[in-house]
Length: 150
Image (cartoon, rainbow, N blue to C red; front, side):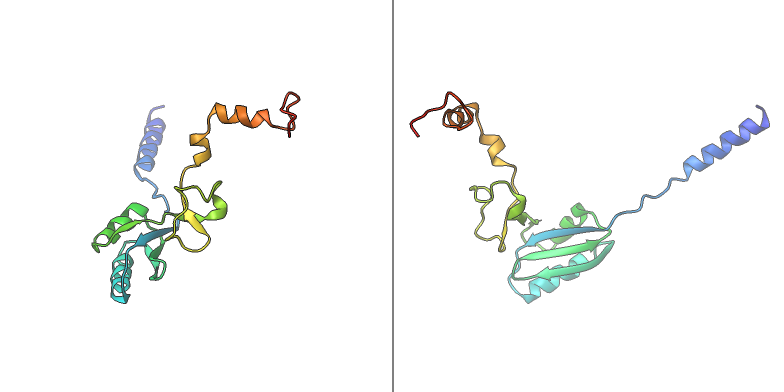
């Protein structure tokens, strides 16, 4: 255990000191940014292009949307976009097929792009009560003791 054990211990210690860098994955970060003109869009694109790791930046003036693709972190992209002094938030919209109840008051937004609604928690789970289940079972065809008036 003398010299060999010591050499093994030192080699293990040195190999553990060399930390392997984790490879960052390519991410796409979408932001909703209030832009009024082409000058605003150019300013936003210039700032977002300067983010470390950004490979491509797309700015859509009509949808008020900026998309950054590359080895970036959403918090850093959001912080960089906020330096433009514009109203900025992460893209709040999802396709309406991804939401259980797309026409609930919290999800429906007139300013949303076509076929998109706001991303919200499932409101049916939040507001559903046992009383609602009791009334719905009262008139169910599967319930043998259901109301036969219908």
